[in-house]
Length: 398
Ligand code: PMP
Image (cartoon, rainbow, N blue to C red):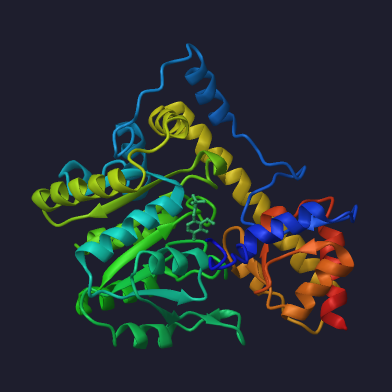
């Protein structure tokens, strides 16, 4: 009966994680999946999260279903982080926000919404992008196209080509954008470039869909949200999906949010209702534990401040690893330019290694990165960085 079911080859990034776990090399290093490990190579539990969990655990409370849209404090936490605490559109009730099952859940509900209410719209993603963007939108029967982004030859962004491409799109086409810490390239637009992009979006009446999974890992909480806040200032309708997986180190709790900025209160109420309806028919309501953690940390002033400090400590450790990696590689291969390593933001570095070089790192050194050459810099620490840098230099030189 099921013999005709297609075989699933597995997710390339999650599959890499399994391969890494099975590797017996004592020096193995996991730079594949986008997870932040601390200086000791351990997945951290943030102190602000420990405090929130202690509060949740005492007294142990009953677990009713949450509302379809999640906890009000979780939703408010998303809104204030994305749009700013004193944002006028929040005071005016123009933003429909639901708590979601991670950033992926936000993308899924957003994709379903686009499919149902903008059935003619195509969704354009950067070339390259996080692979699941394509899978999620196509899985909701939204046609996906790619816009020019990464310039391999110069380790930079094909900005002019990208703008020229946007100029060819149709009204209500969706453009999926990464406001900060682009995955996988680590290359972000400048504020002036964002202004240009948003002007084209406005002129051509395109729909921006901003997916922010690394807020706080680029420059700071506010600068990382520049594109979102500028779009709001320009009066654009806007979708924002956000994830707390990385910046609260709550990967497995699956916490995120989907916000839709509307032009009137009536629109915001309609959109909010439809988002609830969508959640009801996909998974009914979100899980509660992570939602309570988000609620507590985002809405308690002292914990929030502690949280921001903890995110910046993660950000700074990654930046230090970038500097170190660059300096070892420059010393080993002086005639090659490694500036791109420190020009890139967030967890990832697109190293430009060929698939063969990536494969050699894996088989000869036990160093795992994604075959498109994406390295998770947050997997480096002072104990493994020399090993990794030397191995990279070896495969680059041969
Ligand atoms: N968007 C981007 C760009 C991501 O990198 C990720 C996580 N890798 C997500 C969304 C999804 O986040 P989550 O794990 O919270 O579903």
